[in-house]
Structures are given as structure tokens and as C-alpha cells.
Length: 227
Image 1 (spheres, rainbow, N blue to C red):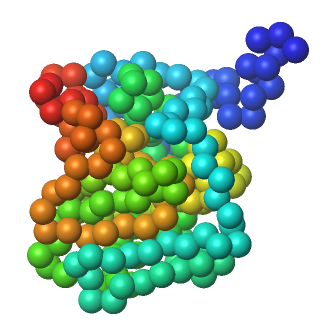
Image 2: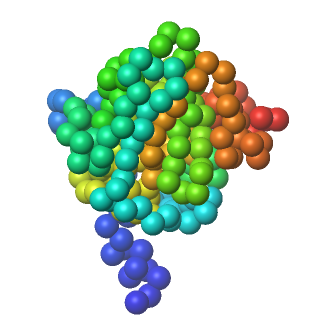
């Protein structure tokens, strides 16, 4: 199979222009606010029509039968769910763009899953919690998120992308999606979150990546702590 045949047979390849928010005809869908900006592509980014695969250690083996999602830290009710239990929680759909710190942006994505604020509500997050540390199944990987971004209406724990289950290479069965931050904050193969009073570096943050990671930050975006 030639490269072009493989490219255009890719079901995730976007052949046309991205839809505008006003073209989304599902009234219940949550529209990520950054999709409404006059220029949806942040500074220093370029649109890709593909869905590139990037991670720190490769795709881990995740046993769906023993998969668990745990919430702990500054919460009134620490929780733990199996995959079946987690899939029964209230769900939403979110229309959002996806910005990777490696300078590509994939526009026009529809994610389905559990709202991050629903998880926080069930666990009873304490007022002193200011940050979230997300844990992945990929060999102890973590990332930190300011709680105000975690609790945004468009943040969710997604199990579906564009109407299909998220494949393992893209973080399935469940991954965190925080559309208003760079995509490394959207932890793949997520296994839980911890609510914290003080910020704590995650895997990439220990290597110098920005503690917040806002693509729309000053200049070229909040890619690194020295930028």
C-alpha cells in the first residue's frame, strides 16, 4: 500500500475544513470556548488533518477486567471505580480543538465521557484543593493541572472520540481531555486523580515543561517554564 493510499484510508484523516461551532447541530453538545476564537490555532501551531500518536514510553498493556480509576487527596469521599462502574456515570459530549506542544493542532473533535467536574462533585473536593495530579497506566506517568482548568465545563474523562471508542494508542480505554491546555495535560490511559493544595510537577514538568501549559499564553504559548 502506498503512503497516499494509507493516508486517505485513515478513518481519522480530516479531508475538509473543520466545522465551525455554529455548525454543530447537536443541542446537548458542550462547545469548548476556544473553538469560537477568530483564529482557533494558537501562536506557533499548525493544523494537522491527521491524529498523530505521541507518548513518553509507548502504549502500555491495560487489562480492562482489572482497570480501576481512583480519586484521592483533598476530598471528602475517596472513590474507586471499575471500568463498568465508571462508564455508568453521567456523560457529556464536548466539541473541542486539540493542541500538542510539539506544534500541531487537530481541530474539530467530539469527545464523549464523564465530566471532570462530575468526578470532583462525587468525591467532594475540599476548598483548599488548588491543583490536580493525574496518573496514567504508562509506567508511573503523571501530569499536574490547575484545578480551575480541570473543572472547566469542557474538561472530561473521555472514552469516545468522534463517535468511536478511543483506541489504545490514543489513550483508551479512558483518557483525560483538558481542551484549554496543551495536550500533554490530557493524560492518556488515565488511572486516577489526586487533589492537592500545592502544585506538584508531573513527568514532563520535571523535564522543564510549563506548570500550567496554556496554548494561548503570552508570546509562543506556555510550552516551557523558561518561555
